[in-house]
Image (cartoon, rainbow, N blue to C red; front, side, top):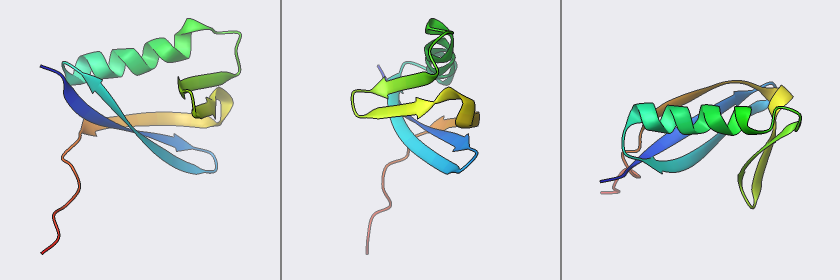
Length: 73
């Protein structure tokens, strides 16, 4: 069963969060690393059709299991 993971890209000018699905945290991390390495000549990282990051601006990324939005009382 796939779980949702929240990836946060820490960048020079801020941060961007994105949700991905994977079977485990290790597979989610490998998926993001593979996207960086797929086309080394490309200066951009295309995560979705509407989400593209400049690789040079990404300092690092963090992953954690997505816990959903907090419920309001």
